[in-house]
Length: 356
Image (cartoon, rainbow, N blue to C red):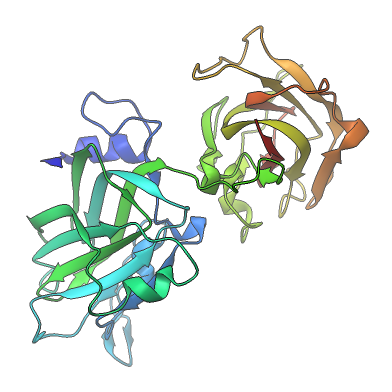
């Protein structure tokens, strides 16, 4: 693959989904190994000073001066012991999605200074099946392919490289030369879902794991990303949902547009207000359109009603199915728009159905 270094400004553009001439395309920047997607650290060579699981934390690393634990100084990252007898330390991670095509790599050595990784390499493989995880952690496994060649790293800074024509992987291995610490490891790419072979099986068409993506939203004022809406699980607090600012104008609404992971017929929709108890929306409605590869705007004339305006309650999963859906018989959709009235917070937006 042709890899090029990215400047700090371009890294920020990539992470924040802001268009940039050199950034990873905005429809290909999912962090495929984020712990929010339920990725998993399967194995590692060592984690004496700080656990490898910190690598996939979606939150920025933090520093706690003067804090020590039993093994030494506390660090928010992965740190191995000194004097590694092997050429490198390593960690194997299963993606949080079925599979993905890699378009960019980020290695953040924030707060590691004097104990940072001097260099890294990234390898990937494609293995599916019940024994895939067991297979890739074996010492004699020979299915690894290069995703990122040997790259030098400096202390307490973010490093990123853009990859053109990324390979499809299910697992990655980060190699750290020769030892030391890394705060965060991010693997940007495009989700490649693995759907059931039977088209009659209900799937969560909107899930980020299945390739669903938030294309746009009216706003996300409180720093809670709109992309949280499509994550698995119900989250841990109000910080991992989507919340808009208080509106003062009469007739105000907020909205979000979702591209489904596959074109499908909708069987049910779940709108979850978990943890939003005094700041949930009063009501919401859902519209859909069959737009193919196009990206519909909020005011696009092709939107049709899927769920009429419904009252919402606090800290609750609201499920709509059967007669509560306004979809025409046989209607299929590629995109959905959820409108909330007038503002507030939603934890998850789940759309279930069958692919067509």
